[in-house]
Image (tube, rainbow, N blue to C red; front, side, top):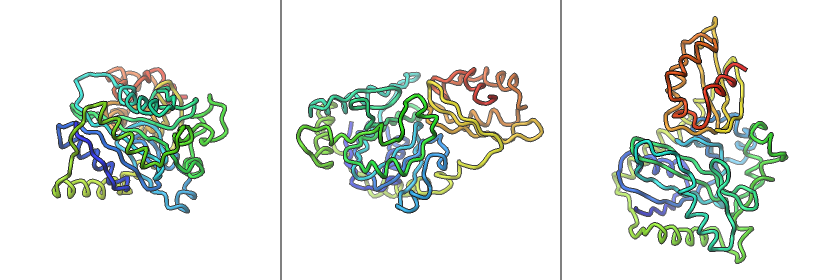
Length: 327
């Protein structure tokens, strides 16, 4: 495994680095990076439903869509992102906790009792400071997560505009009431860069990483091309968020799903599925298989029965899917 220390704070560039390494190499990597103020949207989310548009514009906060599932997260220079890119055995189950483990161990070395919680979070005293997400490409796996160290919680709670459905079972009044900064729990003060250096040493020791990877000029050209043509592109970040005639949102054990359908004369002309769910296969493939069907529960159920829905919507059943689509 190689270590990459990215000093570039453009989220488009760092996501492009991840995608380039995932799809064009067979080596394994660990990377730490930071971002200028931005909101990172999950691959399957409706961007407009996740942000406070006026606040984001007023504070020049960038919006970038990831290739991983999960929910929207706020980043600034008080946040550290960590990335693991590894080779994956065929049919190996999704496992978030194994990549969170070295992070948790490092925090415990600093006297902070962090716990893996729920589907993909790491918490301190029940408050979230890290969200994790994954993407599978052939025999390769990308896992990345956030580490809120000294982030601006006012910007975090103001820039994000979460669907109340996400929090209906939490009895909370705001995002800020559910999150915390790692720095406020340390016994000895550290800056964010000191913490980054500590975490680098800890994870490198845990994995026996001795080599640092340096990009060639040709690789940087390709990475910058991906950054500009995809991650900085309006079509990628917002083009997946059109308006539809029918919208319904349901929260399941496997995550939240927003159903958006355009129905004409009883036929599904278009369907888009957004949410913070996870899946190994591209949700666009499932959407394409539902287009052209009658908007009839029996017809849709028959089509879904021919698929492994868990590959698209992990831990969400056909019955739950139908409940959301026909409620």
